[in-house]
Length: 319
Image (cartoon, rainbow, N blue to C red):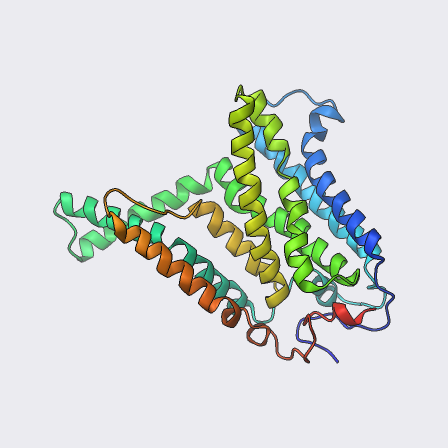
């Protein structure tokens, strides 16, 4: 039985559970270790600017992603797969049902930021009202468009923005979702266990930020609180990203969700300007998010045939 965009199953032996877990741990450790390799291993001189520092990290993250994909190709039972698209399908990189995988998870994730969106819309409205130019006209729309284009240009030239909104979501989702989840599925782990277990690797990979913050003269307590909050947030997001990948079978789904979360930050819980309005918007948004979570990620939306398989990918039949 073939599934749309899924690799043919053929005959396979699966992956030993211990091997799958060990490989995931190795990929997480390598993803962090390679970031420090230019100065520690290659003995390169320290970067002279923030831009050069981030460019080095871009290259390191790309190497880490490529090595993880290569390692998975050695461990996963994909010897009988021929062609580029079936191979990339192993990592949930697919061309079919692309718009569903791109738009629906993006709209679903935006529900979590209903309060933030309400606050930003109000701020925009208030600023326009103060200058007396909040009416809709061709001239005002032209000004808004010009400002938006200018903002996009400035953002495209910001290396830190590239790191936060493009490189980090792309490489992290490739390593911690596209590579790890197939290994764990082939290792015989249940999908619900993978959703809650695999983000541990993702969260622990952020522990190195404690050392970096401590070097920046953060106190031990402040660095611990900052990184502790980050670890908790990454675990929760990891649950959601793993859920999206398993349910949709598309890597692009957790990637766009990751990008949106990085752009928006933490959801806004309250606002002194709008008093209870923001809190109400947050509650409504979160309620709608959980209401639509399973219907909006139904595998039937993203695949021609699910064949009543516990995981549409077919990984569960590889053993």
